[in-house]
Image 1 (cartoon, rainbow, N blue to C red):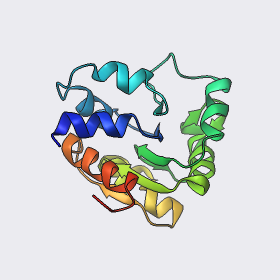
Image 2 (cartoon, rainbow, N blue to C red):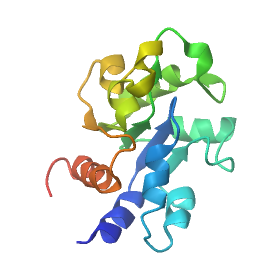
Image 3 (tube, rainbow, N blue to C red):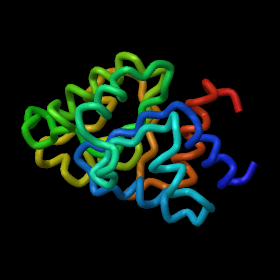
Image 4 (cartoon, rainbow, N blue to C red):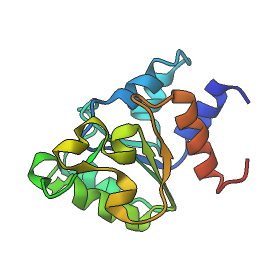
Length: 165
């Protein structure tokens, strides 16, 4: 299976992708991969769910409720988690820490993409932390700034298949 086929399979899977404190580098890196019809898959496919500053069409209370009602999904988090600074990161009427905590309870796997999500990245000195430190549970991690699009897709594919390729 080549990269574009793997990416299409991943994007047609039940994934909830949430952007915390982020520059959107990982999302952009996937979008510039050159695979055909990628923007339509990334922004409009179902059941793939994206909650990002990049996607104004998918926002608001109804979409947030849809995210929270998901079952049997892989949670992907892009961006650092504000430790003790919840007022700096809101998603709808929830802080990103509230949303990520609720989703992480129900996710079958969690993937942190990018250095900010892995360890707080460049803003760690300002009090931001990585996803595994915040959640205190197993998280698949793809470091890099931005993370490699191929490594993100390989890790997501691995998480979706339960480690069976």
